[in-house]
Image (cartoon, rainbow, N blue to C red; front, side, top):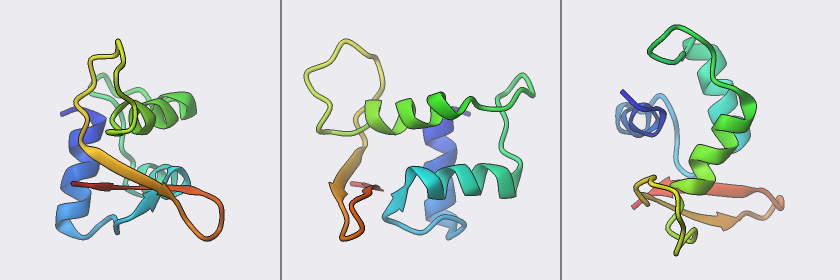
Length: 84
């Protein structure tokens, strides 16, 4: 299962609250021991990229990621994401 699918499942199960930040995702990955299908850890840059590349604001683009996330800058100045 792709990382974005795992994130979506985590929001549906309540393991991850929406909206979530990059740091929330990194904490969740560590806490839940989320790894790639080959057993390797996700690179920090991959986590940033999947959120950015899955954002509906990231259009038009050449990346193949499905645009399933909305985002905004929160009161703390951090970008937060949620599923549509």
